[in-house]
Length: 71
Image (cartoon, rainbow, N blue to C red; front, side, top):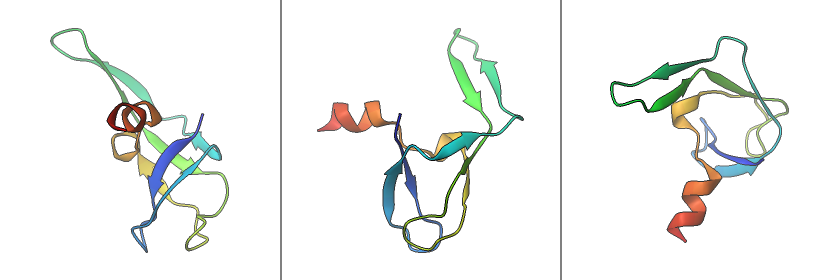
């Protein structure tokens, strides 16, 4: 599944399937039973705008389902 990222250098957005969820991830339960994934996602290849392999907090990644709902 493609996720949406923003280049840390150029602030350009892009979508890719080339990422990995790091092993330090966890799921937290909220007071109302909602679940929240916490962890770090790293690009498996270089960013298409600057070439670096950025790392992102899960909360900073755009979900493709949200993008579809807003269109």
